[in-house]
Length: 346
Image: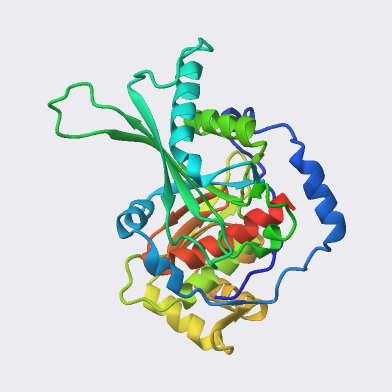
């Protein structure tokens, strides 16, 4: 898969206040990014992209960890580069974050690093989770609840998971110095209070800045086309679209489900450029769906707003939620999300 360029993206219109209250405030890094922006002109929304393929680098990934990342709903964030982050200090970061979480839970009381808090934090590398050799290594952070009884067989319970990655992030890598580690895409699964606490620790420790990452209807349309174009060994889910109709006193949602093989046949009928998806094909694909729906229900979907797309590859919601279903296209999905995260940072 070729390197991506930044598309048009719509900022999140509503986000959880508990998370936003923590993820605020510019950092000194913003000045460096602002300087980089002055030297780098914005690239317009690309008119074509490569159809996602299975990256050869992904074959080096640990299959158990990859499987753990699938079939979970992740909240998306963009993240500015981490200052003075070191992969050799992951164990130390685990201890420091554990202490910080315990202190927050105890409302600011001083806590010694290394004490037993009935929770533990684990930082671990996600080997092979990159688009090119130049991309920084992805890493995973987990909060575990330690078993109270030694005889328990269940082991530790995962309370929260987050991971940081950069897939084909050349656009951002070229703008910052070597003191910064660029991992612009952050995905979290678990309680928002934990996401906020961990985000605060990262911001204080690495002088970075988190921002919720919404997905515009425009980008959802691209996802629908690219994911429908992917060749599947077998289909695991129905292709489904959800549109929102603004009305009073409350909005109305319209769900449109299509058999995945029918969706693929429709895509094949409009697809003319081997190995690529073009803006014209995306528009034609969506227009065909609108026309088919209007013939049956006399409703103009073009007057509504696309809020969710679900396929056998992944599902995504405009509020910044993603669920990746197919390991074969994991890298391809993350590449597009990285593109959106970088655009938001810039």
